[in-house]
Image (cartoon, rainbow, N blue to C red):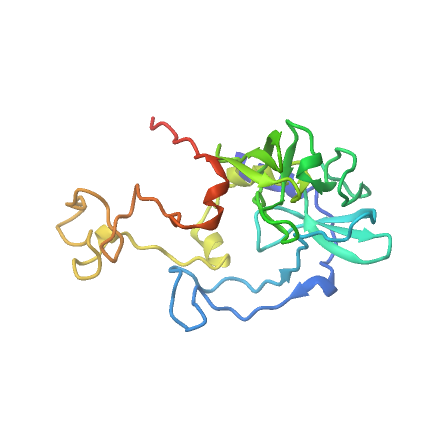
Length: 270
């Protein structure tokens, strides 16, 4: 019951209103299928109908103050979103940081006050400040640190680069000309929410996952045997016979590898 209370407490902060119609999109359901029609992500299907909110990750309206007029739930992401209205009357959705309130005023500029929700260039942000929705390339919009409760810490300013420590303990250097928002992403209680029952996942569009050990040998490498037997292998395998645990999934030639100064620290097993 404790987890359910956390869920209701966090949603009490949201504004009771319908989403902005001009910032909504409707998608045809693909249920984990690629453009070819083949299933590329398993265990997807069903779920309630939901509309996509167009979130402005780039926030390219510089030097125009905006006022927060609503805090809303977004069914497509773990964080909450904020509806802001610029002085020229244009409305946009942005990722809502923690402690942002309705009525607050924010601004996007090269250098401004260190205030939650403001957005500025990394080179102008003091060491020790928490940031989110961070650009990797100038002008391409925020790509990093967008999940609920996440944030990156500014460690140092060196030359044309800013050093950041991410939530995963990984340390990266990002060009100082890139923009980032001040604060941490909203809804940090998201990790404590207990799903409660299978029906909740079905409503989210997640279908049941069958254990490999419950299958026949022809269907999965873990299959076969009598009763609840082990997998009978040195290491777990995917349904296609490849290593399932302990392998690196990041591509070796990924262009952002050059920005990594320190890899994430491995958690000690209890």
